[in-house]
Image (tube, rainbow over all chains, first blue to last red; front, side, top):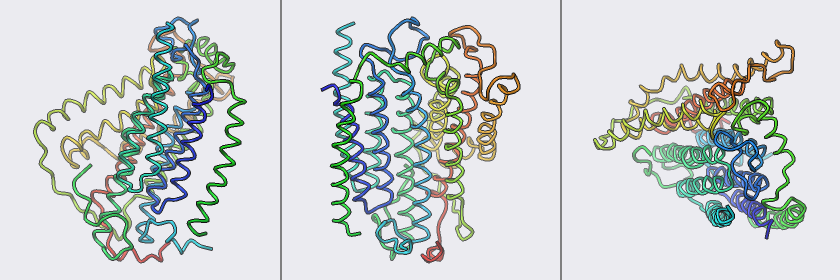
Length: 114
Length: 104
Length: 251
């Protein structure tokens, strides 16, 4: 029971990976990658949660109050924003791919085969 | 205090179920624009989950990034690709030509 | 590899992953457990440096060097995406016709635009006190600016978006983060060490270097994302790729 949130994160990761494997369109692959990425956020924040804890912000709370783990939140916070720009880079690559090869189907990119 | 804790526990459980279901749906959606909409919904649900997990900082950036930025980028990419397909209909098709209409 | 073989390979790998991951999860501290040794130490360190928002303290003080790496990734991907999206020599720009926008939308946009930008600035400025900071506020600023596009049209967005200035601001802010770290070296301690006076707990000027780095990150994220979205919007709205550019052999 108490590890269910972690298992949910694992399921989200596998679902995103399945979408990427079966994708016929690069844009959909990128969308599925961001689904798999969100699994890491769920896992990290679930590990940092402390029952009865409040947010680790002390502007209106006593410094001795019980708070959740701030370290995993800091890790997740930067990755949410940085991950979005990496998604943008991948989408820019997809636009170039469509321009230069005329297709978005990864299986049709025969020019990239060795 | 104890009541608030149980309530928060239920909120986390409901948000977690919603997030898991929507993430699965997003991964299984084939059409990119529809996927962008499901991804936007997933971003909002993740923001709710993060708030329940006492992470307002993360929820704030997830709300802006997952709810607005990522779907917008995907929709813009699809629109660009469809404009090209409309200009050159003989290309190996992706999406229906001529569907790029109006700013999103 | 054929499609069925690929799915088969995925299912086999997924089964192995599921077993190993579940085993690993049983070894983790249970969900909601009381013991968080790193968290407790991070909270103590943040309170010592008089930063009310512990997450900002972790990001911009305790692990500032790590965040420097993160924002370099952000800068590099914005740079890469803009380089990929710039109009090629054989592409032509066409101005889209202005759309007729209902006056109510125009009014709501005109009211919401300054409000959203103000909220973004507030979120950046209070990063060391309340939930918020450079990363979140920057995203709010960048997306909020595009209300001009929703409420009016693309030309209105161009007027409120001085791209050249924002491109320079992006680079300057990214460099400022790296240079601010040198202050620690000059003061005789480590790189990115917090050397400014720490101020009073829960005041806008508390936390030493935290609000300064925070502002630099806010500027970088905000301007970087506007530049990024500009690249995508130009491609989607204005730039036509002539069929000749798509020969397929120009990889």
